[in-house]
Amino acid sequence: MWFFFSSNLAYGEEALNFLENIPGKKCFIVTDKVLEELGIVKILTDRLDKLGKEYKIFTDVKSDPHEDDIMKGKEACIAYKPDIVIGLGGGSAMDSAKAIYAMYEYPEYKIDDFHPLNPDFYDLGKKAKLICIPTTAGTGAETTWAIVVSRLQDGVWIKLEQAHKGIVPQYAILDPIFTLEMPKKLTAATGFDALAHSLEGITSGWKNEFSDALALKAVELIFKYLPIAYEDGSNFEARDMMLQAAAIAGQSFGNSQAHIGHALGHSLAAIYHTHHGEAVGLFLPYVLQYNINDPNEANKSVDILGKFAKQLGWAKWDDDNKKVATIVIEKVKELQKKVNLSTTIKDLGISMEDLGNNTEKIVELCLQSGCTTMSSRVPGVDHFTKLLQYAYEGINVDF
Ligand SMILES: [Fe+2]
Image (tube, rainbow, N blue to C red; front, side, top):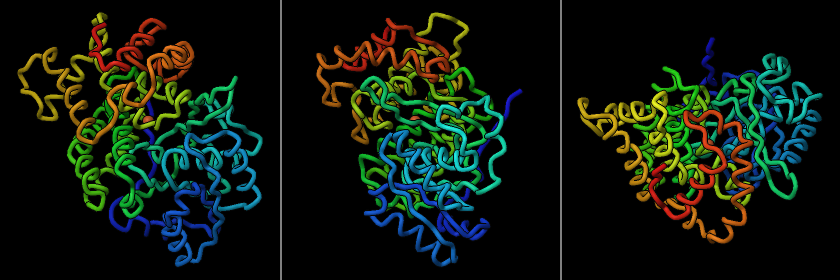
């Protein structure tokens, strides 16, 4: 049995008006200090004021949210007793809101209790509704069942990849007013996160017809609108379409799963604190090539990416999939350059010596990552080590 899940989505101009339809008087807003300082939180609170709703703002969310801060948020939420919880921000704020909301409903639970086999989380919603409002266009956290939480363990901020279908937000509001001021670098990095979700999703072990269809549309939109949003952040249509693309990609990979690009991205970031989108975007061409190089014929990545290139109009229908599968990878590299993202680990300013010193730890984290097992080709220590070396130098993966 398979099960497709998604948030209810309000999108487009004035999508924030959808708040009128959500019953409840007291809102607990989970966000971060930067968004408060930039006036982004005020856009939301002005609307809540107009609707006569009360609110309390929790701003202690950090990038790659720390477990301790989420637990503080849980206590603040329990004390406030809201009937609406709102996650406003990027993936960190929205993931934090998802965790805080679920633990408000079930205070006896902690982060380790977020796993697909916990039956109670299917029964959320007795105390409050959860709404997520993204202020970046990429993570798709407003549509997914996952929360990524950082925990300090043996001196390293490891990333816990927790998930439960019950914590998919009931509502997501995709209003471009929240992304119009996003800086160029963040626009590019988060856009590449959405691209990685789509392309890892179609080559994951859980790919399915629903996720494939959504990934195709997300990739089409990202290739068209990311360069426009990057060059002209005030372009409303591009911002609108990138928000939609990110949510579509979120619905796609939420139902198929990301794989080794995310395992490598999370593990590299655990050591170097690289932005999530930049890290997974950097690894994307390498892991796609690794998948299509699989000598095991049961791996269909060549046919999947070949067909994808044709569907996107990048190849002819009678072309050999072996020849055209790499077109998708070349297009990803072109787009990466167009929006000035790093294409190698060296570009991140990390020395070869430093990476060498940390490789064993990064590979260990990759092997522990739940994303790794989702790949249609699963690397061991040797291949993860080689993928890091190739990604450092920018060498095409030939193994
Ligand atoms: Fe991601």
